[in-house]
Image 1: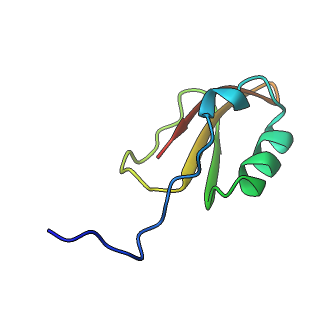
Image 2: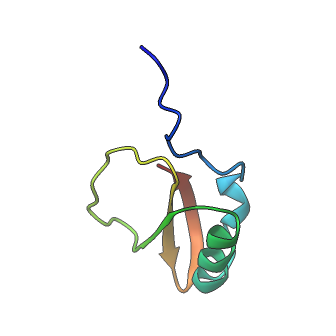
Image 3: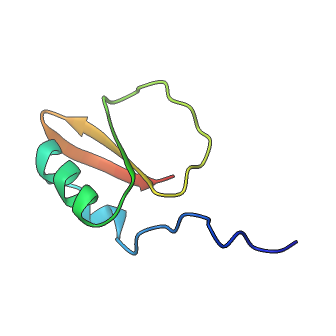
Length: 71
């Protein structure tokens, strides 16, 4: 199967580097680093689990990122 030349690319950014940032700073940084979608979620949120290239997910507690993962 041929690769799709128009497929989105994942930013070369380490998700763990967002842990500890304020939610606003993390979202701004993610956008600057090329993430096309950023999801800030409360702990225990029920979310869809399909993998999306270019999406960064944050768990936010008390205004700070406590967990971060791509997809």
